[in-house]
Picture 1 (cartoon, chains in turn brown, cyan, orange, purple):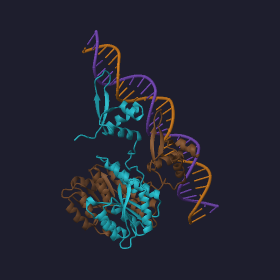
Picture 2: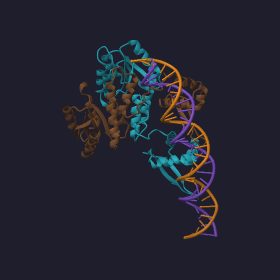
Picture 3: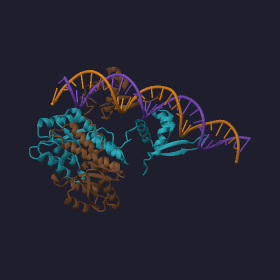
Picture 4: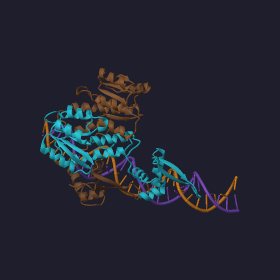
Length: 230
Length: 230
DNA sequence: CAGCATTTTGCTCATTGTGCTCAGGGTGAG
DNA sequence: CTCACCCTGAGCACAATGAGCAAAATGCTG
C-alpha cells in the first residue's frame, strides 16, 4: 500500500482528495493536514510514501514546505505530488526543480488523479523489477512520473538507420520536403517516412511547416533546423 | 546562454562532455570539477544554471552532492542532469526524487546529449512565455525535461498546428484581426481561419469584438487575451 | 417601418493527406 | 527449430482543408 498524506488548507477539498485517493487500488490515506507546521510534524511522525501538497497554505508557502521535506535524510525521502491552482510558470518550474513527482493543476477529476497515481505507482514498480536499467527504462519511468506518454526520446533517435537516412536526405536540401517526397527519394513507403518524420518533429530534430492551398488535408513539410551542424 | 558546470571525476571524460556541451547552441561551459568538494565550492562561486553531475566521485557519492545542492536557497536553484553508468533502479529513483532534470545513462553520444539539452532549454523557454499555465503545459514541460515525447496524458491536448499558427500570428500584433486578415497572413482559406478563430473564442483563448460600419454583416475581429497594457 | 442591397459568417461536402492498424518477413535469443 | 520482437508496407478510416452557397446581420432608401 502506498501510504499517502494530504496537505490542503481547505477541509472540504482535503476530504474530496482523500476520497479520490482512497478509491485508487494500492493507495491508502494515512492522514491530512491543513497547515504547513502541522503537516511537517505529521510527516516526520507518520513517514508517508507520498504527499499530495497544495501550494496555498495559511502559514507557509507550499514550496517552502516542499524544500524542507527535500532536506530530510536520504532514507526518508518522500514523493510529492504538487496540487495547485497556481498557473504561473515560476511555480511550475520551481516545483519541478525541487523534484515534484507530478504537478496537477486544480481543478481536476477523480479519474485524472487516479490515472496519475497509477502511472506513478507502476513507474516505480517497473523500475524496481530491473537490475540493469537502460536509458529507455529511465525515460519511461520519468515519463510516467510526469504524466507523459511513455515513449522515450531514444526511440526514433539517430541510431535507427532509416532515421539516419532521412536526416541525411533532408540535410542535402534547404527545401522543406513532404513525406511523399522523402519516401520517393529514399525508396521507402510514404507511411514509413511519415512515421519517422513525425517522430523527428516530436524530438525537435526537424521543423514542421504546413503547405495549405487545396481542399483536403494540408501537406506536412519537413525541414532541417538551421543549426544542426557538426 | 545557459551556463553549465561539469562534475566528472575522469579528466578525459570531463573534457569530452565539455566539448559536447560547447557545441550546443545556447549553452556554454563555465567550469569543471573532479571531486565533490571542489564542485561544491565552485558551484557556490560560479552560480551555474545547469550542472552535469556524474554519480561516481572520489570523495562523495554524487547523490549526496546533489542533495546538498538542493538545499541551496530557493533563488539559487540549479538544474541537474545526472550522468551515470549506474544502472541500478535505486539510483535512478533517488535521482528523480531529488529533482534531476534528466538522467542520462553512460555511454551516450553527442547527439543524444544535444537533443536533451535542447529539449530542456526549450521546455523552460516555453514555460516562461506562459502566464496562464494549463495542465497540458505542465505535462509538456515535465516531459521535455525528462526525455519524453511531448504529448501529455491529458487527452485532446495535442497541438493543432493551424491553431498554433493562428495563435502565434495574433500574438504578434496588438490589433484585432479579422478572419480574412488572418487567412491572408497565414496563406490559409478564410473559412478555415474563421472555423478556428470561432473555436478559440469558445475556448476562451481569444477575445471577440465586432466591427460595425457598413451594410452587411459586421466583421468579427479577434484579439489575444493578453492584457499588454499597464 | 419595410424592403432591399451588400457583406460577412457559418456550414456542408468533396477532396486530399495523415495517422494508425495489421499482416508479413527478418532477425536474434533460447 | 520456435518464438518474440521489430521494421516495413499496404490499406483504410478519418482529420483537415477549401470552395461555394445559404443565411444572417447591417445600413440605406423610400
